[in-house]
Amino acid sequence: MNTSEQPADDSAAPVAIGRTWEAFWFTPADSRPLALVRIAAGILGLLAGATYAQDLTTWFGPDGLLPVETVAAWRAPAAVSLFDGCGSTVAVWSAFTGLMLLFGLLAIGLLTPVVSVLAAVGWVSLLHRGPMLAGPADDCLAILLWCVALGAAGEHVSVDAWLHRRLGWAGPRPRVRTRLALGLLQIHASVIAAAAVLAQLKGDVWWNGMAMWWLTTREPGRVLNLVEPLLQSEYLCNALTLGIVGWEIVVAVGLWFTPTQRLVARGALVAWPLVGLLVAEPLWGVVMAVLSLPFAGLIGRPSLKPAG
Amino acid sequence: MSTHEGCFTGETAPEFLFGDLVKWPVGNQTGDVQRALVPYSFCFKSFAMPSPNTSSTHGRWGEMPRAAATVLLLVYLTGLTLTVIGNTSSGSALLVSVVKGRLFSPWMTPAWLDLGFDYFFTYAQPTDAALRLEVRPHGDAAWQSAPGTGATGPRAVRWQRLLRAMLVSEAEPGREGLLPAAVGAGLFDWCDSEDVDLQVLVVPQPDRQAPVAAAGPAVLYAARVRRVAGGEVQLIRTEARREVAPVVPTAGGTQ
Image (tube, rainbow over the protein chains, first blue to last red):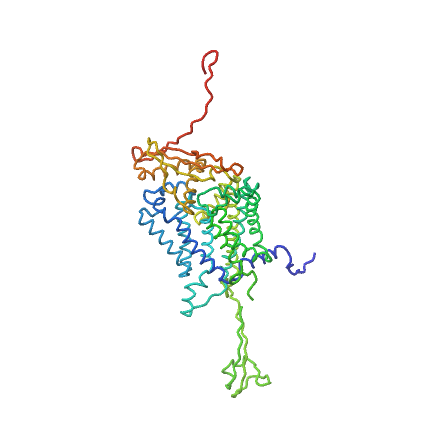
């Protein structure tokens, strides 16, 4: 029996997986890309919140269409909402205005560590108050907000950073929790695209290329009216439909490979908003673009390699 | 781990430096500490030792935080996978649903992370088409368009989601009738009556092969909602009349 100790084989699969895992999740990362996500999340929160404003009392008011008891029975048992305690119109509006204020503070980056957590909790509370009203943009915005709350999103391009400089406090530095936030953004950007493809390919209209026709002839919420061009050309209808599916596949896969990551992420900044316009979910398109934003290399780098 | 480097020069009694612990270069010579004022040139290079505990050092995490984070990440990623493959509205295996429901929903749902991300946008089914809510005091002939009918943009999309949820939840155990009853009761003031009829209509979309032959709106759901004694809200669903076969008399009478 050979009792001599063998040096660890660095190329062994478990070692390689462990190193990749460590590098992906625990390499301190620059928080500048996350600062962009924070600003975008704050602005998107204001925009998404604005779509609630006009009907807030009609839905959530004391005599509204969605009383707390009904919603509590309808939604998942574990769901909770801070808005459940708002029994009057004034209370509902106060809570809503507070949430919008939080989004504003998040966008400018004031008291970011606290504000980001409160904004995330406030947003999911609003969604749980009326889950039947929530759509893709709302879901994905919740993920953006949790990732912003996890990372050090206020260290750059923020009032916090300006105050730190004025007061001579410690400056920004790469952090592991920022890397965790960026990693989760990358995973969700890919998973959401993959899940959308899987869901779409369960329907005939996404296989036969006619989904774009059915989307564009549905009027509520429609942004682009493509009825005439699609009537003129079935090829165009097919190309747009299959193009959406193809793009989702490209994002789901392309974000994971170094040669394609930056290209896909930069393409996402244009392609996702266009997809959002085509499927009558413009906010969703923008949120999906923001999920890919840190990997476009516009500012800082969410590098997997150690800084040294 | 970081390093610090630097040099001092001057004259001093060497014991003021590091006693007899240090040998250092003086000019071009290296020797023991001498008890006299000597010119010195002292260079040092110190190494910050890694922290023996598991706290973070210079932005890096120690082993224990990394291990804890790894466990949390693995649990979260498992939950995320199950929410995608076990999404309620897209259908899933019973086993996946139970595992997801028991282990992951209690903490992923409150954070609004228990999602399937099944954004199909359309399957060209009636519930994917434009929906409309109409209401009237019970007994009136004329239907009125309910609030939100004239909404546009993202606001209109939220109203569409509400109407779609009213339709879809009728087929979901435990949710039947909840939304129509609540919406109907919420429209009591608007109708100035505590006994109202409501209906959800679908506006059929034109087929691309015959774009001008679209049919008129069709009723997908209709119900009567009223407040009864004790303040309870009662929902009476209006079933569509169905074609039935005529009763055929037989030789021995009717059946």
